[in-house]
Image (cartoon, rainbow, N blue to C red):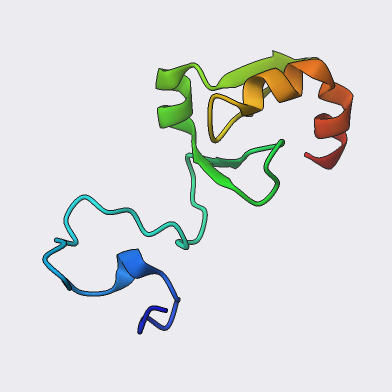
Length: 86
């Protein structure tokens, strides 16, 4: 377990030879440019990264962003299931 107050291994100083540079704090507060994956509720998504990777779907005039490649097909199979929660 982390010594960090936030509990994230990415928010602690350099340990065990792993540099902090380039690591994202996944427990950071969502900010502008962020969305939540409708399939994996509670999972933050960086909109620009999802757009670049094609991890999004447009459904009934709204764009939904996904955290991984597996979420798109799940969304396609039953969009109503995921758009109600979003």
